[in-house]
Image 1 (cartoon, rainbow, N blue to C red):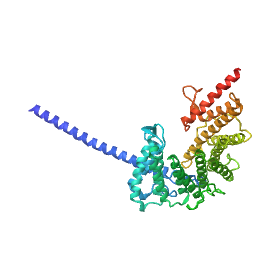
Image 2: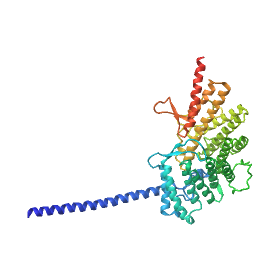
Image 3: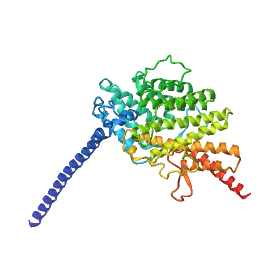
Length: 479
């Protein structure tokens, strides 16, 4: 009898412990779930009210860097996501922003083979950024909700989401370029061919068309971007022979769109063998950009104004390189080629130095032997701290390093042609190209590799020319 009571008490105790375990487990799961949900919503609200907040810096707004940045909000004055998207749509858009800006863990993903549409040649393995892949999925879902509630949205919300989605598709490989073009063209249609946002979209469509091998279509889109950069409505009767306006747009953003479109047009004409047109565009574009008032001193200019001036200076560097290449291809003055390349190298180095927080060299201080700054890839804090300027400044720094290296490399080739193998000036130019394009390896500082943003193919050319010239100079010394 005692044994039965003991067994019964033990059973009751076990059941009681089990009930309490289940009870506390349930409460714990509820608390955990609530905590996760709270953290999830808190993160979304932080992005909504901080990352997507409207720009407050009046100087940044004066130079229109807030309008030139990526458009994640339908109304830049209010900021945040468009309420018309609904709860799910707004969550999808914020999730896309987080995936793109914060990443998703793994840095890259392989996607098989890829090649340029309409072009022959061996396929290559295409590596994509996982954050872009994830952001594209979220944007696709956000686009679904935006289209379902388009009548409730701000007029720019749907075109902006389409533009963001198109940009992600563009970066996911050449196989998706046709889809990217369609998305950009839908955004263009939603803007009715009006305003600077439409000009930005037109410039991007031209770029995608060029990558697809659709040269004539690309030129038409760049012409639209050029015309709209003056803040005029697109006019289909625009003279097809006029590409460079006589006067620059009044707005800073319009000036940047114009300069970017002219560089693209210049490159297309040169690459397609239309050298006379290319030279005309390049010479007129350089004159136009130089006519835009610049600050008397970059050091005394505000960061937004300096960044605008540096943007135009960098585009003039690209035009100078294009013009030097065209003049060389047309078998004209080699001295003139060198003058344009020297100007491009000087301007690009000036851009890079200012962006990393150093003072620019004066014209009388610029020479082949100036030390290349060790911190040439470290963007100044005045730009990294600004959400409106950070991406533009980072891209500009990357471009300036590439342009400086390209200009010095071409100068080295021309000096080698004039002075023969073993030329010390040629070696100095190639060495400077490698200095701007490369960084020391961690294993052996004496060995250099391509810096971030420098294509491997470009680096191989720079390094190959440098090593060849170095060996030639060594042989010359031994004689």
